[in-house]
Image (cartoon, rainbow, N blue to C red):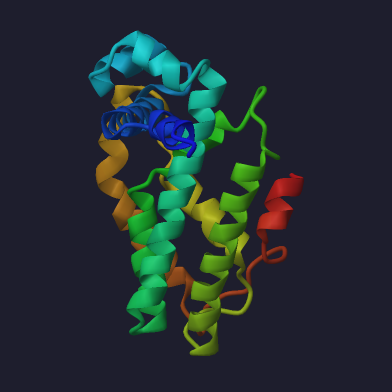
Length: 214
């Protein structure tokens, strides 16, 4: 009887405290990237997470690895908000509105400065998260459109661009005072999505594929 295999499985499975430390690092990094930008010193991230530098680097050997994890974390949480809005049913347009406001709390706009330099935008994890969000938000928008509540000349890209712009703080604590206006301005934007449209939009509806090409 081979007793080594079970023992090996036990030793390779991450411990609960190790998983908690990893999540604390990612959450702290997201907060500090929002506040100060993606170039914040990693020892400051470790300090906010309440872990030592060695623990941070054991989980994320370099800044790129940590940025990658933060981007996927935010995208996964944003997709989760869309899943919740779909599962709750109810009024289709109000479900879309709820998603927009909940997604704003994930600060997806703060991802924009991270998606530059040597960041691998074609990494399978990122592409899977991107496809998941696109599918879920498309479902939310189609549901509202089928109910006659969403104007016909907007697409997923339009929604995600506005959401990113309105939730994208400039790095630095001085800009955090704008937080109190985010949901107010999002409400104005979402009201502009409702059918019947009161104006003709210039250009054409933006898809996520359009955003990737530009």
